Image 1: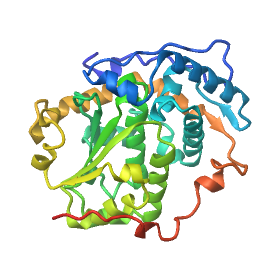
Image 2: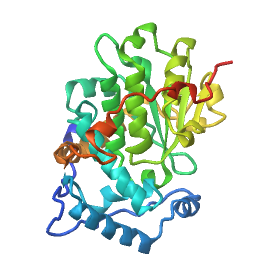
Image 3: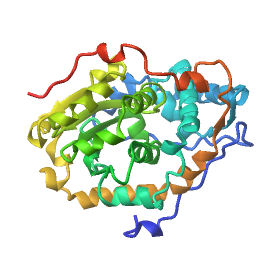
Amino acid sequence: MSQNGSDLKPLPVPSLEKVPAEYDDEQEEPSGPATLEKTLASIREDPQVREQNLRQMRDWIAKHPHIRRCRTDARFLLRFLRARKHSFLLASQNLERYLAARTLHPSWFHRLDIHDAELSHLAEIGFIYPLLERTADGCMVVLTDWGLLDPKVYTIDHSNRMHMLVSEAYGEDSLVQCAGAIVIFDLQHITLAHHSILSLSALHHVAKYVNHGLPARCKGLYAVNVPSAAMWIVNGLMGFLNEKLRERVALFRDYDELAEKIDRSLLPKEYGGKTPKAEHMKAFREQCELYRDRLLALDEMDIDLDHNESYSRHAMLDDIEGGALGSFRKLELD
C-alpha cells in the first residue's frame, strides 16, 4: 500500500440495482488461522450451500416489495449469510433491518468518508482503529478509546459513525465475515461530562442495531480501565443487548488483566504490544481510503419503511421497553 493514504486508488463501486444486468460473483476465500476449518464448520460454510444461498438472496431482493436499491454482489451478501450461519431466513431478516437502520439513522451511516473533517480528526487522534494482527482464531480486534470523544465538540452520533466506518470498511473482508470481531472499549478517559451526550434511549437504539441489524459476528465486547462513573453506561447497554451478546461482555481492570484474554502482542506498543499505535491507525486510514467510493455509494441503497412489517419505521423506532433494565445481571468492578 502507498505510504500516503490519499494516493490509494479506491475500489470500483458495485451495482446497486435490484436486478443488475450481471451479478458480481467475485469473492475471496478466507484463509489464515489453523482453526479456520473449525470456524467454517461452525458457520455452516459450504461452497454449494453458499452459492445456493446467494441465488436465493438475489431472487428475494429482486422480488422484495420494499427494497428499492441494494447491492447484490457476493462480497456484500456474504456479510449477512455468514453472520447468520447461512440461514437464509435469518440473513434476509438481517438485511432488512440493516437497510432500515441505514434509513432511520443517517447520522450514523451516511457519508462515511475519511475525508470528512470530523471523522478524519477522530481517526487522527486514535478514537478507534482495528489492530493490525488477528487473534489465533482469525478474529479482528478493534480498539476504541471512548473517552477521547470530546463532549464539548462531539455527540454519541459521532461515536456511532466511527464504529460504522470500521464495520463497513472491513465488512467485505472474508476472514472478518467468518471469524468475527472483538471490540475493546478503553474507558480510562471518560469523565462526568460524557454523561451529557449519552442517554438510555441512545444506548437502546445502538443495542437494537447490534442485536438485529449488524451484519457481523460479534465475538466479544470488552471494557478496560472502567471508572466507577462509567459503570452505568456498561450496565445500561447490557440491559438492551440480547442474551447471547451479554455473555460475551467482560470487564478488565487494566491491560494486564486484559492480557489474560487477548494476546498482548496484538495490542499497540503503548499497551504492551509490538507495533506502535500510529501504525495501527495508519493502516485504518488506508483501508478507509481504499473503500471510500464503496462506502459513499452505500448511501444510495433504499428501502420503504412505511408499512406494518417488523422492519417498519414504527417497529424500528419503538420506545424503550418497560422493565428492560431490570432484566439482567449487572456487572460490577471489584
